[in-house]
Length: 345
Image 1: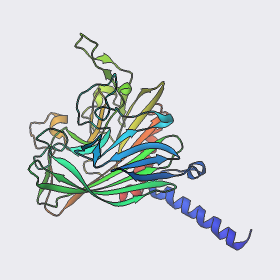
Image 2: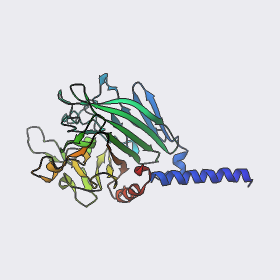
Image 3: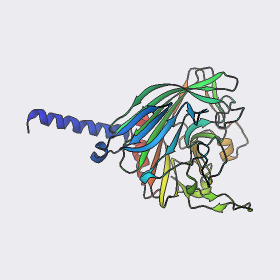
């Protein structure tokens, strides 16, 4: 082999090793040749394709002609083309519950920020307003979206600001998204208050629910086909309000079992986090709801206070996989994430 050809191949090999070490995500040669992660801006949204297949859209301005109250990903297409999140309220399809109109597919929000509610979508709720993209990059191994946002109260005042980094990885079968948010006390002292209503959240496909709505004329919920399990071995309805390093929600979608796990990085404040995970398909990591989750008398037990000028960062990995948590090797992939350098930046 000629020296120039050898050096080219060697440098390519080193680049691949560095990419794997930084992210804790393995990307094989087949993935690299498949078109990578492509992020395209279209009509006030970002369209995201992985390996030549549609993965999701990031809506940051409007949806269906209406201004959005917060940025969100919808739809989420998982392994084998399975839709991982419900459609309502974005689309009105048969056989979906019409509860909690603020549960928009995949999003980040909190219900008590200096006393303002950014979780709900009522006349009294604030809005998370997209300010700018600071980076938007497609790539063979990973696509990156960086944004700046401001949290605006009903009276029009800015409560605080945040920076978000979202990394989408090129994988042949499963799907993986890293979500990092840094919240800044940019407008004065900031209190992230104790409430179960938050924060890193999904509303899953109706078929994955642990329980189904009552039959017509009945009051009692019916058993569903979904299951929940966390890193401590706690299962199903007992997982709500418990602390764990990761939590997984899986069930049958279009004839096969698929699941989604959320990983709480060890460097996050209050790790391992609490889980606001419901039998009807809400799935959220929440580091602030101690009063609710632990039935504490102190309603401020979960408050996190940032003096003016300071900031706090939370990092999560969201992993969409085939099968249950064992088939998806959730525990093993969590350990890879916990060691990854990309999550420590």
